[in-house]
Image 1 (tube, rainbow, N blue to C red):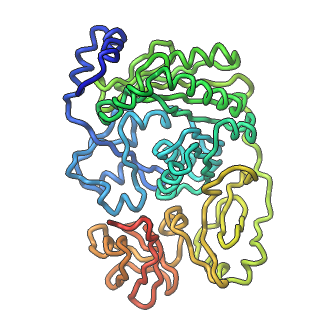
Image 2: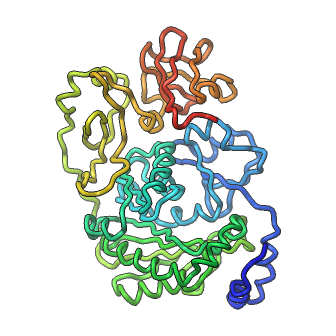
Length: 451
C-alpha cells in the first residue's frame, strides 16, 4: 500500500520504535468480527448454535472473530438479528460508555448503526435510544440495522447537532460521539480512505469535531457521561479535541477507562488508543468524560393513559393484540395516518424534528384491517406471540421463506391457530406469514429478502 510520505513521517514521530511494527501490520491477514446482539441471545448460546470456528475477542465479551468460510451474512441467524458484523475495534466505544437500563442515550453520529445497535441492546428495551445522523440516506440504512436488531425503544432522526441541542438541553444521561474523522485507523481495512485523507485530512475534520462536541456537551445532563471516539491516529483529532473540551468546559473531567487486553494509554492521561499492531483489529481512540453535578435519579414515568385511539377499536387490531402473550412495554400509542407506533414512555415525540422512526412501528391499516410490521416481528421474542411456527436453521424452507416464497409448515413445530403467524428459525423470530392449514402465505418484508 502506498501511504503518503507526510503521513508516514508523522506516524514515525508518533510511534517511535513501534513504527516498524505498525508498518508490518499492513501485510497481516485481516480479521473479521461479529458482535452478538445481547438483546436477543447470549454469546454462549449463539456460539453453540453456529457450531463454527469463532474466537472470543479479548476486550469484548460479546465479540468474536471468525474465518471467512463461516459466511455469517448468509445465515438465517443474521436475518433473525442475532448478531452484527463489525470490525473488532469499532465494538469498543459503545462498550466503554457505561449505559445502564433506563438511561436516555444519544448516538449523535450513528450511521451505519453498529454502535447504536450495541447501545440499544444494553438498554434491554428500557429508557430510550436516539440514533441520529445528519444524512437522511445514511440514517435510512441505519434504521434497517436497528430494526433488524429488534430495538423497540428508539427514535431515529436526521438532524444537525445544533438543532438537536435546541430540543434537548441537558437531557441525555449518556452520549456517544463517534465523530467523522480522517480515518487513519481504517487505512489497512479500507485502502480507498487514503485518497480521502489526501483531500480531507486532520486539518479539515478537527474543527468539525469540536463543533459537534460543543453541541453534545449542551445536551448532556449534570452527572452524565460522554464518550468521544474516532478511528484515526491524528493527535489533532484525538487528544487535542479532548484538551479543547476540558479547557472550554470546566465542568467536564476525564473518567479513567480501565485497560483491557490490547488497549494502550493515549497521549493524554485517561484516554485510550487501539493500535492495529497490538490487537486483532484496526485503529481507534477513546475518551470518556463526565459533566460535574449531581447524578439525578431517573424520572418516574408519568402514567399515560394506555388507551387505543378510538379508530383502532373499529378494526381487527384488538383481536391481534389478544395473540400477544406479554403486555406492551410502557409507553403510549401514536397513530399517524395509517401507521401505528408504540412510543417509549420516557420520551415524548417532539414536533419539528426530522424523524425516520418514532418508537416501534407496530403495523399499518387498510380498510380497517391491521398488518403487523417487520420491525414488530424482530422486536418480539418468539414465545411472546401465540400463533407461531418454528423451523430448524437447516430446514431449506427457512431460506425459501426469506426469499418471499409461500411454504408449508408440515412437520414443523406449530403453536396456536390460523391467521397471523410469527415465523421463527429455532427460537428466534424472522417475520410474519398468514397460516391456513399447513400453508404459510409469505408476508416477509420484500426489501429485506434473501438475494
